[in-house]
Image (cartoon, rainbow, N blue to C red; front, top):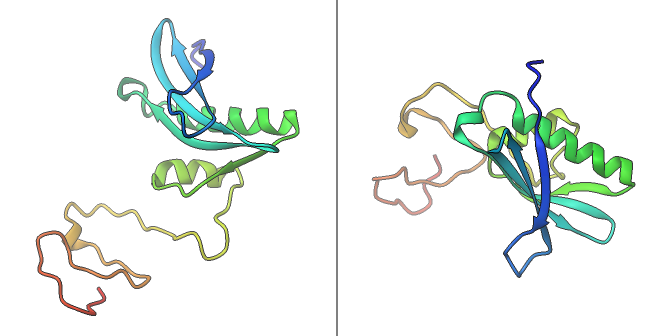
Amino acid sequence: GEGHVLDFSVGLDRNPDMRCLRLLVTESGRKVGFMLLENQEDGSALRGIKVEEPFRGRGHSRRLLAGWARLCLEAGIVPRTRVINKPLVALGLERLGFRPRENCGLTALVTQARRLKDCELTHGWQGPWPGEAAEPGRVV
């Protein structure tokens, strides 16, 4: 591509409840983003990823995810995740071959709708829509 050089640095995350490494990515001294990776006995678990606003839309998250998966495989450890609540990250992982566990994943249709009320949800989601009164047993 464009000849950009990304620099990586690794440090411990500040959260004392999880044994996470913070992989910081910079370009020419500017923060591109970071990944949080939990150390496990036989693997590395993705706990978070963020690409800073000015660097979005350039494929950085895809490269970070692919690089992490490749490093895991080369080191002989298993790349893992927990529930991913960010559709674009989930899509990037799916493109790398990750699949949700049986009965733990949900396919989401992304639409051009501008209001939540214009979307039709399935899989037994129970309302109410934001701003509506709850009706007992209502399934939207």
